[in-house]
Each structure stands twice: as structure tokens, then as C-alpha cells.
Length: 147
Image 1 (cartoon, one colour):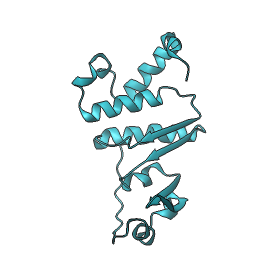
Image 2 (image 1 turned 90 degrees about the vertical axis):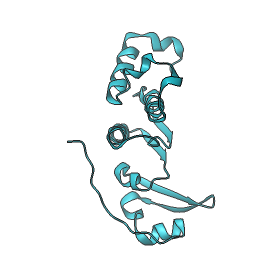
Image 3 (image 1 turned 60 degrees about the vertical axis):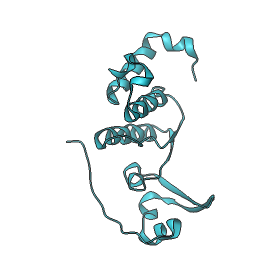
Image 4 (image 1 turned 30 degrees about the vertical axis):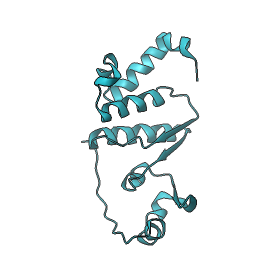
């Protein structure tokens, strides 16, 4: 959004360092991309997307893939902060369990059509999930958090 030369400013470097620390990738930034695991690459990609804390919208495709529970929780917190600051945060997910943690609105597709579009807490019902996925499901709630 700002262009390459703007990344060289002191304030930009401070933002890069801050987001790298939050997502635990500060030590990874010195390594070649090929040396990183899948989860490490995902965290670096998310850090790149979130470094601009003035963006009005964030679009992330499967940002939690390959992340362990700790790093998922950290990323959920960052995305919630961006949404709370007024940014639009759109996340595509295949793991429906993460939708509850993110909150907001859930839009589910079935065969390329919108099958569900409701606030997340209202959307996550057995009948809605059976409608979307076409299989029987059971809902269980597990609270995870960083102590």
C-alpha cells in the first residue's frame, strides 16, 4: 500500500519488528524462505499482511493452516484487534471451529452459492451446519486461551 521505499522508514521498521514479535517470527526474518516450515511460512505471510496497521481491510485465505494452537490464538487476537479498530477482516476457513473464535459474521458457501449469512453465534447451529455440509454434525464447545 505504501510502496517499497516507505518500508525503509524508522516507523515502518518499528511496525515490522512489533508484528514480527507478536507472531513469533522475528528470528525467522533472517532465514531464506526455503528454510522455513509450512507453519513458519504461514506466520511470516500473516505478519506481512498485518504489518500495515492502518489498512481498512484485510483478506486472509486459510491463515490458520499449519499453525499450532498457540500461534492460532495469537493470530485470532490480532485479527480481533484489527476488527475492533474498525478494519474489515475477511477470513476464509475450512475449519468451522475457528469461526466461533473470530466472531463477527459467518458466510458459508455450498456449491458456489451463499447457503448461510448470519452473525457467527447464531449461524453455528446443528441444523445450519447440516444444511451447509450435508452431513450430520455434533457441536461441542472447547475454550482455549493463552494463560
